[in-house]
Image 1 (cartoon, rainbow, N blue to C red):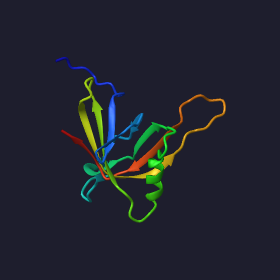
Image 2: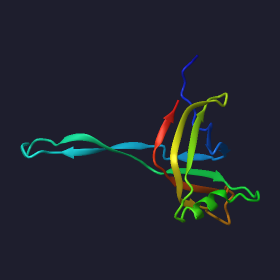
Image 3: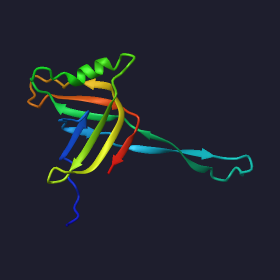
Length: 145
């Protein structure tokens, strides 16, 4: 079996067991904050010691083309309800798929909820597809399998 780079265009996004169609996913990043430490016995020219700190992750952004299907306001409705005290949190699974449609990498996004919802940019002379996007805060990314 040959090893080759996996293209980024074959992926799926699902929550609650439902596969949701998106055209773009962004924000699958994490970083560990470096904590600099100096004690009182270190000279002024000594570089500070560095220790690993908290893990930070950015928001996840999802984009998809809008359709005229009735009831296609699910992202907007989720966003509007997020302003209430008991926000609906969802666990997302994002899978990068191989040529046969089988998952090669899977990321689990824990306790996601919307912080930003954006409609399409409208332009009278344009012929682009109407794209809606949603940005999600979450409580961690884990790689599955």
